Image 1: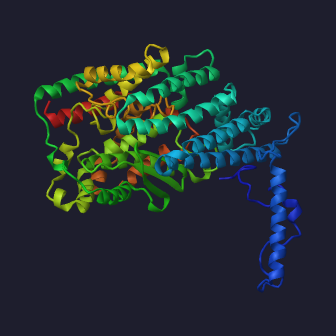
Image 2: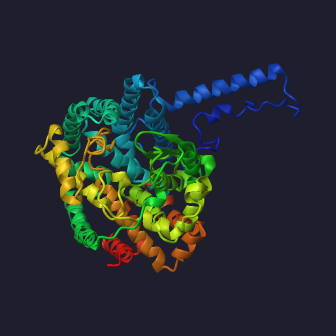
Image 3: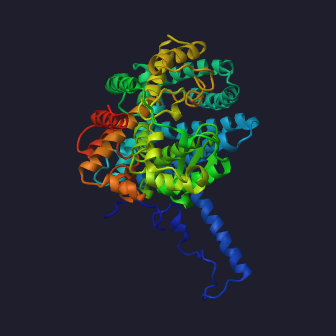
Length: 575
């Protein structure tokens, strides 16, 4: 494909400052092609340093921020495209640093360094806001928006997404945004200590402060909108409470009666085969083999430990999974790895050419959770995949799993029962865990519930929806890190993602994919290829709604999810 002006900046003739290098040698060889002398190498090094200093001075202001063309009245497409590339490089560097700090901090930082980490993140937040909200950036984006006849499709998408990111920050005072970042970092550390002691009291004042600050941020972004709707939209563009109310109505109408029917049978598959103690060291080895089974390239992945599992990627060449291994729950490790591996596959599957742009990464939280829930459930908890999965598990625990059959594993890992912990929930009741959090967040934002009330409300809803008694805060309102991190409005995307995944799976089968055969083979390449082509490679260039319609030939529908749950669990329980 023909690449339009400014797509790459590697050509010496278009790089700032290249004109001054025309007569200078910058290689380390002698003029006659022989080995350079020490004096010649030093001269070359000096030329390089002078060139680099010149390029830096041309590309940045004294404060280190990128320059943009100064005269907005003049149109210079080449200069504007170079300014776009320069802006993107700075945003990329901040993003790389921020993701690294956020990922490594919970895993390796000493507790005493929490405030230091928070300060670094706040500074990066301030600098991002300064870059995006500068008047010169707004003028640059306006000029670029008129260059449709010159810009490539990728560049047009960059302008659109940068403008959206800018609008998220424009009305928010820098001091408010950075204070929210510092507060969330501090709150996360307090949450970890509160969970370790199972004492809500320590975290309680932080939740009140987080909700209050989150509401201020939301009102600064969109003064005329409901603050909770603003946060829902920030994680899934175009959604609000009306959207999620409708989604949960459909899910509840399926799950609640199906759960009641299952409970009336009085029958349960045995979990005995996956109970007992499973050596933690060997579970770490199992986790690495699960990454291989799922199709994650080992030379692009880092595996670390943490209190609450997560994953992210700095680029398409650097993915991170953090897991928490429990000696008495090997299935927690297995399905955590498959879940977080789905996130990592998405990030690493983005077109590498988008790495240094604002289009890098998943398009939304809902689409991200669609990938994680897809590999955790539609692949990992399927009957067809039980064979390949069991072979990997038994290779590390032959004495405990060597005589287990794939069907036994399938039934044991699809047992439906109320559980107090979301991350250990079965596939059917999982969306009810999300519904509880969604309802509590709305109460918090409406002022109908304060932090001191949350454990009581939480426990009552778990009894109402799942018939579960919550015995302590660690297994109750303190179990998730999301609120400590200020991620209000994120939880509903888990339910949305689960439904998206069902629609993607249904489309694969409709198009003729041998779903059962592929999963039974243990080689997921055809599934990867389909998702990479339809979803992953696009990064942020398309919103979730557009991706779903392009991939499935129809807008989002919850019907495939309802049908999948009904058929699967009716078969398991003989309904």
